[in-house]
Length: 234
Image 1 (cartoon, rainbow, N blue to C red):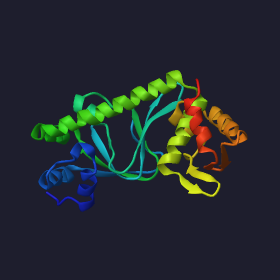
Image 2: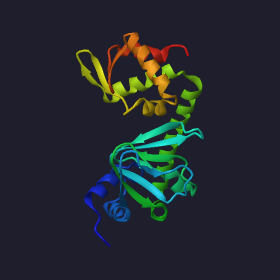
Image 3: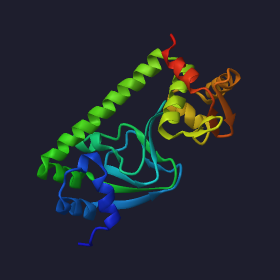
Image 4: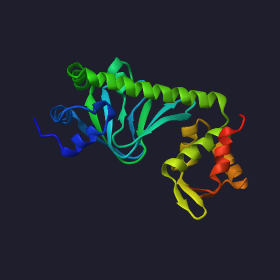
């Protein structure tokens, strides 16, 4: 059996469901993890396909999304290095419940359903960690449903911009600089709307002096005003 590549084992140690495994157990898992490369925009698997196994992101990012019959998409999550995808169908034996595609060039580690189930039988704590991860994702999905049901596009866009400003914004003399997704269609997919409404509401925020749009970069000039949007009545 070939020796596991060190970077594979290092990636697996960052995955919440595999935390706490011994070096020997991680080495066993790394030996059975198959690296697969995907170009930006390439599909990893589609909603409803039989589940062959789970994936761990080694490099790059992937988007987990649902599609409507009319072709509209809603992004459920973006996962980066150390993130795991498709634990639930591997665990319960069902099909993939959502689609996954690469956001940028990405390398994923594939662990077959058989190998993962064998790991769970040998180490029941892994199954308990899967339940915690799935439970956290369920709470996030409930939050998404709540947002879509009870908030406006303006509110959801403001919330998205505030989260981005706080998580990855860079302060400058004129405000907090953030980088939007590659296009308004992708941004619309992440907040559950259409790109026309994204463009319209960005223009309104700019006209009201809360931000300045400079291509895909946005300078949030009045973060407090944008945060106040989240407290306003729907």
